[in-house]
Length: 88
Image 1 (cartoon, rainbow, N blue to C red):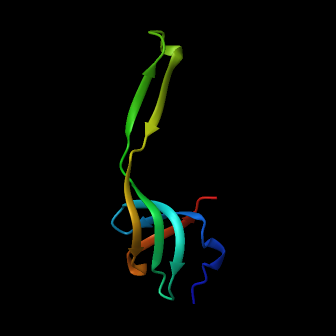
Image 2 (image 1 turned 135 degrees about the horizontal axis):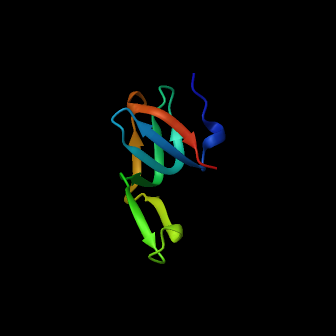
């Protein structure tokens, strides 16, 4: 039996078997691991972004930019969830 009571009303990240990632506030769950999220955002694949403050190579910052798409209130089926990660 799955017990996610300690995660209710907390930020979580769901990774699906399809490779997608969603983050949101966990509002509920059931016995087979299905999860209800509120204020959910899909984390889209990012791209490498270079921020040049100077032409000098030493001052070049490289970071991973991850875009998000707002989904709102969602129900995620337990069998499609590969990993559930607490964000806080």
